[in-house]
Length: 310
Image 1 (cartoon, rainbow, N blue to C red):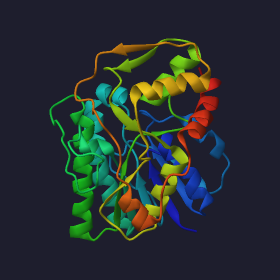
Image 2 (cartoon, rainbow, N blue to C red):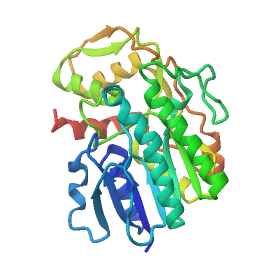
Image 3 (cartoon, rainbow, N blue to C red):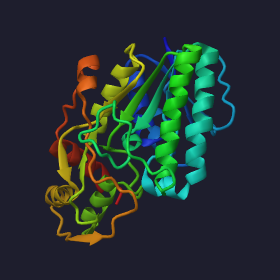
């Protein structure tokens, strides 16, 4: 039985990834300090003999006894409300945390997959975004703490691959949604769903013309798992290329929930990207991957999960 470590294992994505790895026959060790992770995301794993958990800040030295085959480095605040409130911690987990995770991989002769982000592209001047695009990032803006932490993490990961020959992978994750998201984590999906279910006005930033594309969590995890099994080392976009405006997205949430919410418009945050859509050609060719859950189905599942939590 292979052993995988998942840093950020109590988070939205980390917990779903853990479930997939257990299904694939891995023994999984979760690591999290609960700075943004939720212990409730792991409740269903209590008593599972193939799962264990370590409460730790990965910016501190990581020492896990025994053999480890693969590390999935997902530890990081990932929503704007979190990394704006935790700027230093965000920079530290992207730098020191990534260094420690890579050091563990080197010591254990294990592979490592870095959870990077579409935020590496910043407010893109190329659309859709391919992995060859270097991005348009403001390093000193309020979002720079997250963008640059992930860009540094990618550089560190490639350095360990080239210099120490660690078997590394990098996934650039685009907007993802699904059950286990925090209702008030500042991201558009839980924000709009929460407001719609309460019948409150839905707050759209700017005029709502900025675009996003949304990938259901099971599709994302499938792409990440397939990437971990590949022999490819450069970044791979995983996301859903079906693009719509934020205003259209808000209107769809209202329709699916049957809410009487109206849409209001708020000032656009600094450096908010005007367009965001992945080019997934590389994922298709390398991994045979493409998303299969349509937005209507994914949103319906997510809304059902949130109904008991509003």
